[in-house]
Length: 173
Image 1 (cartoon, rainbow, N blue to C red):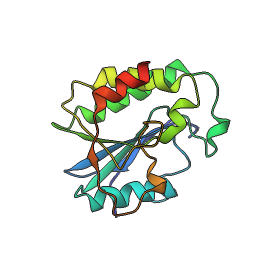
Image 2 (cartoon, rainbow, N blue to C red; image 1 turned 30 degrees about the vertical axis):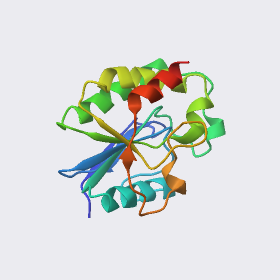
Image 3 (cartoon, helix red, strand yellow; image 1 turned 120 degrees about the horizontal axis):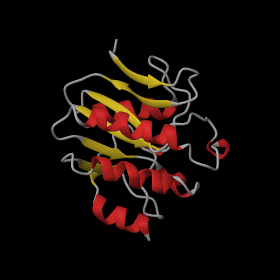
């Protein structure tokens, strides 16, 4: 049985973080959360857990570029709620600041391009955490240049170094 990390809004429409407690966590970024809860993982988080463990991590922590829950991405609102975005950044920083050399797996797929506010949200997050001595990894890159979503990866996928500086430059153009 796991000890869980889990922060949501009162009505459970916003999930800021979910994960397991350990000494060597793999942090992961998705685009927005679905229905997963502690002990009731959705298919994406089951895959995140398997890939984390298969790559030598003893735990995992899932953040999202935008914390609004929706099982159907197309239903995600068209406008960013700045209040939840800023709280999301603060919670992400809180967890990353606890780890000396965090590893972050980028795993949000092409959806980052499907709402005008998602790239600016990710840029804001990156600006706040980039000094945290982070090792950035992915399981691969889509044709668009975005990191592949975990759901479509093999359980034994190997996490590989990701050139975050070049990726961020490409997002700004």
